[in-house]
Length: 163
Image (cartoon, rainbow, N blue to C red; front, top):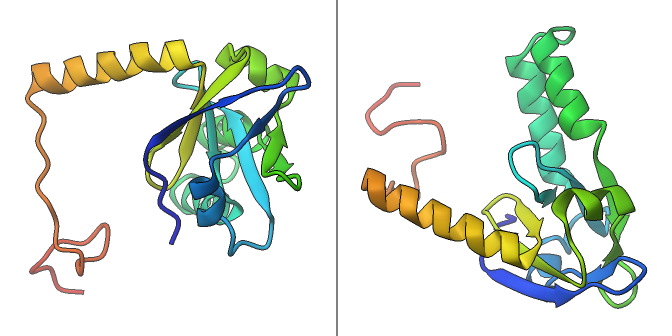
């Protein structure tokens, strides 16, 4: 099971090549496509990235919850699927970021990889630190807490519910 955690910062060369953190590559090693799928975040000046298995799950969820030809389905398919790039790892574990993605995330000579569980994001390191501080401040102001669920309880179900 793929699960990305942590923050790693790597150098981006003049061609736009950057090494994906080894721990992230390891999470993706059992997948048929040896690389990542990456697209512009529509919520932040960052990039969203995942393995092909997550992208298939995302598509299946979108198709099962939204009418195929609805505006909502079309908007999400365009914002995510149509904007996605399959980037293969080279022999050194690097990917080549397309110029449009570099521009969207305002990445220059360094990129920060941020684990978010099923996915990870790629940020300009300075923008990331600002985002992290904003998130901590909002969480603190809202006094957010988490009820830890039993690991044996499947996602989306609640204990005591029948079938």
